[in-house]
Image (tube, rainbow, N blue to C red; front, side, top):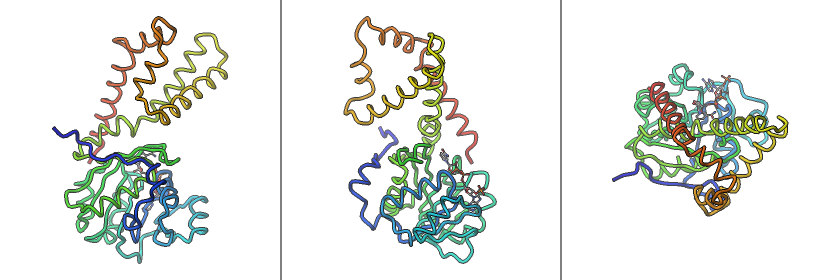
Length: 292
Ligand SMILES: NC(=O)c1ccc[n+]([C@@H]2O[C@H](COP(=O)([O-])OP(=O)(O)OC[C@H]3O[C@@H](n4cnc5c(N)ncnc54)[C@H](OP(=O)(O)O)[C@@H]3O)[C@@H](O)[C@H]2O)c1
């Protein structure tokens, strides 16, 4: 039975063992250098992609993007006029702007161009219809910690992608953090429900934990500091530890103790497990409704 998941690649591996230069594209056009496009760009530059290979198409670049482009010698243009087909075309505009942007971009997607889209909800079929010459198309769903190179991305590829193009896509997405390849594109909606939308669940947990602290008698500012540091500290520990989340939880839960008392509530029939299952299912359903 297939799990639908093929490869895990950690960002730290990429930093420690930079991908061979062949995995990085000889030429790359980034369309849309907003929050996510800018985060990818930062990652590529950290991974050693030659800035002279990059062209950014962005009608309203932020001062940061303008400065980065000027300092690193990256070509920055408001429109894709006069640009030849690159080896990799990375789409990072808002999904609702694709209709407007795609016609001028079609020319850039040649038969050998890897088209890599991070647009929420835009399926491989939808992208293939807009870029008919491109054979290698990747649909990816990164998440917010990509902005600090600590995201995780689920990605699915068109059938016709070759191994070298898939390696290029992995190298490019690794700029935002870890990469998980999915055999089945339909799993992207569930990925959206878990990791795409997931950072907001964790922020909400911090808010709720702080409110619970106030209800238990703590001053609000102190409760917020305690809740925030608890989540960031536990996350950092989880990241560094070889133990699983369950093992770490068991290690701090003594029988009959305070943590056990709280976990009996969190693990109950109305606890966090069933609530998260419903929440992820709702996000997955909404992602499917918005796809096309
Ligand atoms: N942010 C996330 O956590 C997240 C997570 C997963 C996936 N994504 C996906 O990432 C994509 C980008 O999201 P974002 O948050 O980075 O959005 P964003 O900050 O609004 O960035 C989009 C950028 O594209 C620019 N743009 C608009 N039309 C363009 C055109 N025709 N040609 C070139 N550039 C154009 C926009 O310029 P203007 O500001 O002038 O319009 C903006 O700078 C979305 O499709 C989203 O689904 C985001």
